[in-house]
Structure formats: C-alpha cells, structure tokens
Image 1 (cartoon, rainbow, N blue to C red):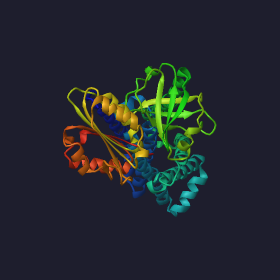
Image 2 (cartoon, rainbow, N blue to C red):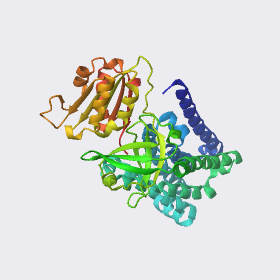
Image 3 (cartoon, rainbow, N blue to C red):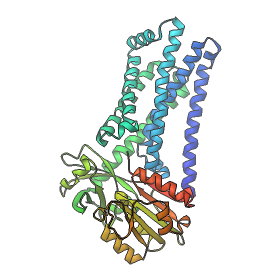
Image 4 (cartoon, helix red, strand yellow):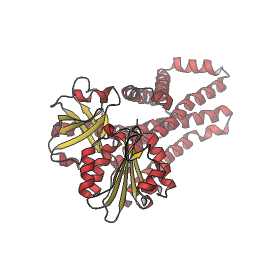
Length: 444
C-alpha cells in the first residue's frame, strides 16, 4: 500500500473517530443532567449511550461489508471482514447493555421488580416490542457467528442468517422514531442521525446491489467452459465484453453469482487464477462444500453476475525488489498470476505446499513459468513419503534452506488460516519485518 492510500486510510479512521465524538457530545448535552440525581438517572443516561453506540455499531457493520469501493481499496475486504467480526461482538455488548440499563433504571424509578418492569415495557409499547424482537434476532446471528459454531455450519447457512441484520436495523429504526430522546431533542443531531442511515444504505444499495447488476448487464458475462485441474479442483472460464474496464490486478478476487438452477441464490468470492486475457476471466475452485462440489455441473452459456475486483493482495513490480511467494493448496490461485506478473522483471521464488503430487494445481503452468523466467520452484508434499523433494509442511527450517535471503524479500502468503498463522510466525523468526508479509485468508 502506497503513502497516498495510507493517508486516505488514516483520514477515514479519523472521520470514524469524529463520528463517535459527535455522538458523545450530543448524548452528553441531552443526558448529563441525569447524573446529578439518583442512581437510576445515571443508569438511564448510560442506557441511552449504549443504545446510540449499538445502532452506530450496526451501521458500521453494513459499511464494513457493504463493498463500498472507496473503503475496500484502502483496506481490502479481507481486513474489513475481520474488523467486521470484532466490531460485531462489541456492538452485541452495547445491544444487550442498552435494554438492561434502561430496564434497571425504570424499575428503580418505580420500585418494581426488573423482570416485571421489562415485561411491562415491552408489552406496553409497540416500538419497545420491536426492539426486543431485534435483540432476539441479533442474539441468533451472534450465536451462529461464534467460531466453534461457525465451523460446523455451511457457508450458505451462515450467510443467510446474517441477512437477518437488515430486519434488526428496520426494527431498531422503528424503535428510535418515538423514543430516541437524545437525538430528537436536537434538530441538528436528528438530521445527522437520519443522514447516517441515508449515507450507509445509500452506499450498500449502490455498491452491493446496483454496481454488480449494472456490470453484469452491460458486460454480459457467461460461463464459457469448465476445465478440470486436479481430481477435486476445476477452473471456471468466464467471458464478457470489455473485461479490460475492470482493471483487475493479479491477486484480486471477484464475487460470483451463477444464474443457473441450484446456483443463482448464492454468491461466493473467488480469486483470479490467471492474468485476464482479452475478454476472459479464469477462476479456479476447489471442491470443499456443496456449492463448490457442484461447480462441474455449470453449463456453458450460464449467465454470471460478476462483482469486483476486490482485494489489496497485489504486488508492485518495483525494480530491485525481491519476492518470496508461499502457497498452500488452493491458495496457489492468487499466487499464480502474481508470480507471472513479478517474475519477468524481479527476483522471485515460489514455495508451494500440497498433500501429494496429484493435488498440485497448475503444475504444468508453474513448471513452464519457472523455466521461462528462471525462478526457483519448490514443491513441499506432506502426504507423499516417496517424493524425492521436500516433504512435510512449510516451516522456518525449510524456508531458511530454500530461501536463504528471505529476510530481504517481500513475502506473499496464501493458504488455509492455520498455515498462514504458522508461516507468519516462521517469517518473523527469520527476520522478515511485518510490513513485508502480505497475506490473504480463505475463510468466512
């Protein structure tokens, strides 16, 4: 990421910080007097603050995964998705704290049992009932997002459960209209608050829905063929008009929706596995679930909604720079076009981990590129004892032998999350600075 991108990224973070300062200011103007009385007043004031932070957090969630190009190009969808997860848990805490503090405050005011007071509040006001339903829906979404639960879910189940957050926002907005004391007391804050909704959902509608539909309608993407790469991996060829308008870079990915029965209701992210040529895009997909296992059933001519490109897992072939590319399994897909871009003009080396020789994706292509551009290519096989080359997993010891000057190289990693974690640790041990370690995670 260049200096200009870093500066713009810093500016976006400052704007976000300013947003929370605005919230704190108007909340304090409307609720500070509550701290001067009994404890119930303080709880009510804090409950209001937690409500404002909860809604802000939910709106931020939509911005993080709304695919707004102006944000994604600064941070990358991979990093935004991770922030989305962290922000989700913080927001969930505010969502729970808001009704808890409000209920305790009103129960203290009228000297009532908190549980009875909660039931009284919810059953006595439609907007409060809407808020309670929103909390229940959000609890379900968060439970499905917990790592130990998520690992047992299909991607599709997890994805469609997350769509419930749209209902949560609608119910929360209905709750705020009559009861949003903090922002309804100030015309300026009211305009600012409603402006947030317009800004966030304007971005979501524009970038998440309108842009991919417009792209696909004007460029008319279709499946042109399916090419088997290994026993469980296939390349999908997609053709359309004016592909060059995408300005897609090696290492980036697209989000695809195939308009064929059994496929159309799902969309998935896939990396480019070749530098775009003419009007063709290539995506190489390993069979790892119901959706990806059905990829061979795609019919040539199937229309495709193509959204992208996304990702900052890209390289700048600066003269004099040296590169180390390290891939595991299907993680070779974004690495393959990257090395074709870099190797002609820069010192490069590729270390590729796979289970067996039969699992190596693009073997002929990689061997050809290695021979043509004269860069070292090392296959490391973990489940083939008779392999004459490197065996086992890629670790610090192997990297120090295979790439002795790795501390002087830009390191590009792609593979399963456990592999990435161990590789990042190994590279730091070998003296590679964190700023030179570039990676992309294959997970949801």
